[in-house]
Image (cartoon, rainbow, N blue to C red; front, side, top):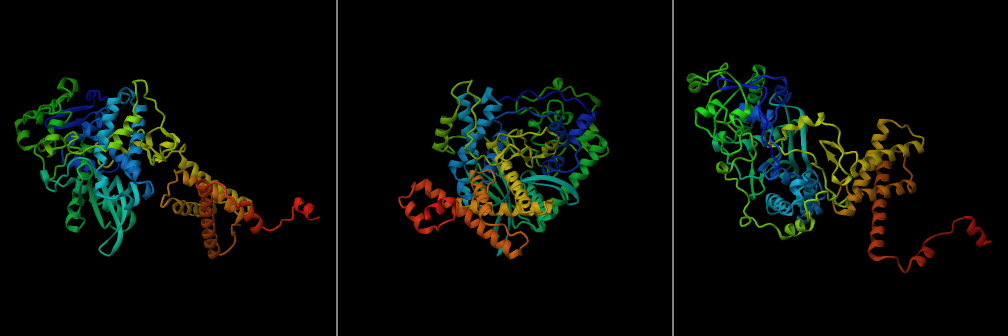
Length: 565
């Protein structure tokens, strides 16, 4: 749906069994200063396919496996950013409906149709719903979601990627972390088609964590959420060494192909799903055909041939300086997270296999547009969406390989309720931005009012202390929520202002005095919240006047002076 035909493949040319890049524009899309896991796997598969995907991006299909998987991934990402007590099915459904409204605003010509809207909700719910049978989300001690690693060298290679989730665990009498990746197709067994691409992906992530944190995670796990299957990935030297070696070799291969502006073709069972299948000389020689039914024709692609492929190059793959073998190597992962149906049995969801929760169907019906013109439904501003993926185009790459484009996009801001992050940066229109800016400004005001130095060091330290008080009080009141985006954070910031006005900040005092102030400030914020909640729950007290008369002391104000006189 919405997916237009791929554009003509300009800037490319066939040279025997290799695909040459003939334009700077295409080369700019392919050449990159780092290596991602998906790119490394593409180098081990068919590098020519990698070039095609980068130079001929597909349009958006909201019901493709990758788009539905991206939606399910977004829901889990936002869910695990919330406090533990809020990670339940009802909240997940609410997040899903919020995402559906975002898509309705972006693609009203598709999502405004109630039938399509309901179908999308059912398909996405089918994909993420298994998480509640695999684990109790409330018991997961989340350290990071969508943790980005860049600026690190893995196996001597500049690497970049996103880790779906990193959590704290205790295993083998040690406290450490586990890296987790979500998948929404069926589990791929290690060694299938001569590879363990999902295992290699998690091992690269684990090595990146080791470099950034100084310690290797205790465990790594792939959660095949739709099919309720968890696979533990071994991280011992026996497995890490070959994974890192392949990652290093992929970088060498990529740099070689870029320097030559020439990428080899390699056949595999996935050729039928390649956009170049109707024009690739190697695929034609081996009888490969379009298995999807919408691949561009050779004429539509318009890729010129510099030199035809000879029988020698078919047999030996000897064109282009020794690259371009027409048979896949032992390790030949496909570049897609969601493989074709008849290779890995990834089929459209059957309601008989996984019944969609009734509350999802009811909620979808309640929120679905009722006419083609009802697509611009405003998101519910009371709903905390967590980190927003608004505007992110669905990508098949496991590690968000298009991350490098975020810094080149125009600065965008989401609506306040759509989450704290957009395009990888803080949305300055979010509630979280109001929170962190307000806390920092409060620190500046407190320092200035007390005649203290206002410098990056003092402002940063005091803002951090204020944030700790706010976070601890918020967590105490809400049973674990520490989200800057939540309304509880707003209430605690207001309480802290009252605390600052009533409990003097110990400028110039010892560390013990500061720690004592932090404890008192946190306790008083919690007390304010407790009284406020009690006022809401129970209403005014019948004993209020009596308590005030008994518990307060006279103050020498003009009114009391006149009364006493």
